[in-house]
Image (cartoon, rainbow, N blue to C red; front, side, top):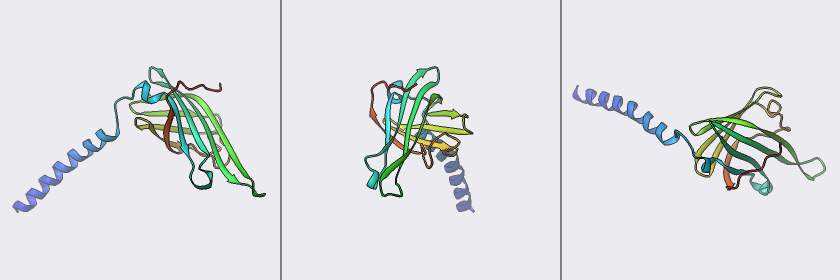
Length: 157
């Protein structure tokens, strides 16, 4: 009986403390402009290791970021030549804590979530197909990106 009571108390304590610690380690209340500003790249592997997707980010203040995506999908075409499908997007994302959300409804429901994992690293998750995001075939923003420049990025538009 005492053993069951001890086990029950242990389970209750563990289940109430563990989730708080896990969320405290992964979610931050805010990220600095220095961490946000710059150019981030996600390199492909294998025969396409010289190719990469790129995101430019600039903190605008008041919970807004200017973002620009330059994305590719490298492949070998029917003639054996290297080719690539491309995708671009640019606009304003809203940031809350360590997570920014970019929405583009020009071609359908496209949401790109930018998670600032730690300084110099962002994880991008695309919700919506390549078509819905206005990208070329098989082009996706998904991936882990590393900061390659801290300079204020220049945007196309």
